[in-house]
Image 1 (cartoon, rainbow, N blue to C red):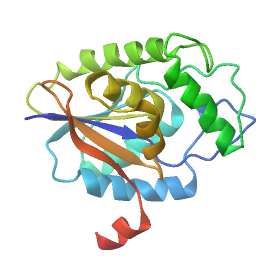
Image 2: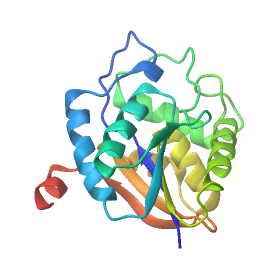
Image 3: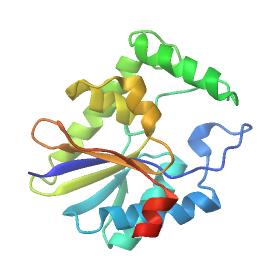
Length: 197
């Protein structure tokens, strides 16, 4: 059965002075794209779709080059709108904010989109692009929050726990195209995995 690979971008260079939509990959993040490409090698992937955000597109571009497939940006695949949401360096506080985000899906807890709004926007984009390749695997480089929201729509998963599990970066999971059931659980970069390949 064809699958949908949902990929959380590689490690960015965090710059609190910039909106996260403009964060670029760090040197380590660029290096880790080779691991991601090796993980996807051998899959029946026809095309790599990407969020319009910089760190996602840079991840997609590097991986697509290694897989010799095209890459295309698609509006709607971007992270939840975090406009006016400040950078929070404290990890515990960051996690607290996102637990609230997932637990209050109709409220604008973070930025200008509720969890429901971000999830539906992402789902509409996914459903639009999957029709193009009905018999092939498709891979989408996107972001942890929207990836989590979409996966949780179709699977009995605690969204906060899935969101937390998507580190270290990059990370991916795969869903069956027929019903979006989880086919490959979250798999994250690790030095151990890289040494074994």
